[in-house]
Image (cartoon, rainbow, N blue to C red; front, side, top):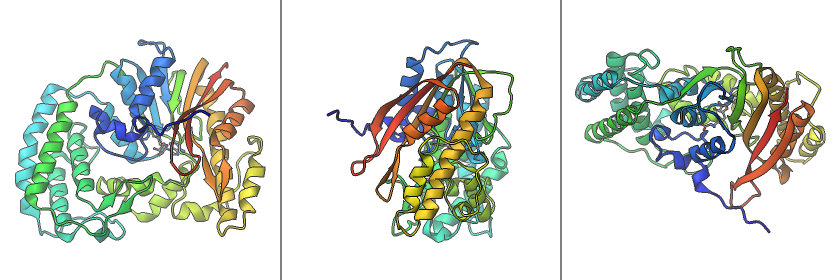
Length: 410
Ligand SMILES: C[S@@+](CC[C@H](N)C(=O)[O-])C[C@H]1O[C@@H](n2cnc3c(N)ncnc32)[C@H](O)[C@@H]1O
């Protein structure tokens, strides 16, 4: 019997120690080590020939890893916050820009205190009192205000955005959110942080971020906002490699996890937008995304083998949400099939694909993601399809991560 280990170095936790990769600890990320191993395996050329596509960019791990070793990568994500964040990570900054920004750190720390207690803007986060104590919230609101004064709203000043990343770190580190599990939970109590603690946090984090930002990258990576179920926008290139990790069919909602960041940075303004964004995301399942499933009609009839039978099994499980979950799984694989179908137009002959995917299980019924996606690829004319276990994801259930590879012979 082969023993497959849980490999902490193949998760986002490994990235926290990896310079720019560690700027924000976001659950969508896969391990930079894994990407580095893949890039070493697949004969990428530094130069004009190899162009990587990551259609599910998340925190831009693929793009950053590629740019750091001199490669070119285009990345796509549906979430505007992740597009913004990914581009900050993948940008080169000049020494002058960084020096100027460094001077702003003490200015912000000195000036924000003037605004504490003023009736300032607060993000419209549901039950915000579960996230921060009243006094910590006042400090964050004042610091947010000072940052807007100094560098503008997020997205206005590309160098100033580095300080917004530092703010995001302070905001999340002072919250009662706990990210110990796959999904987020709350500590029972919020903490009253002092201005001294927050000053120290912000100054240290911002200085560290500016330090990491000094290194110029020999390659190039850019993130674009797009829905990867549709044909990617034509950028005049054909991709030689696709390296990515799409959502898994496990009901994890990226929007739910990213809410605090998205509200504080202004990428989410109303709660109902969160649900619709999750609906557009593959595997999204939060709020309105679940209720819309009931009326959803597939856009195409071609589907991987065995999917209708698997969904029928889940629907007939006699579980309360069985019917809904059967539809959820159906839509997930339908959307991924559509993605593989539309991707073909952007691929160079012999393009190599590497997808890191996870299986799941509903009411004890296994959902073999890697097999179903392999079947989609096969139906759509991809060749050399292989499935390889990367790591075990969970000690209790039979949950694994796989690397699904294929070649597009065009
Ligand atoms: C597993 S995460 C990617 C993680 C990434 N490899 C990283 O290291 O951060 C999947 C990503 O797919 C994005 N996504 C979901 N549906 C999408 C769609 N229809 N089009 C483009 N991106 C989508 C999500 O927003 C999420 O960021």
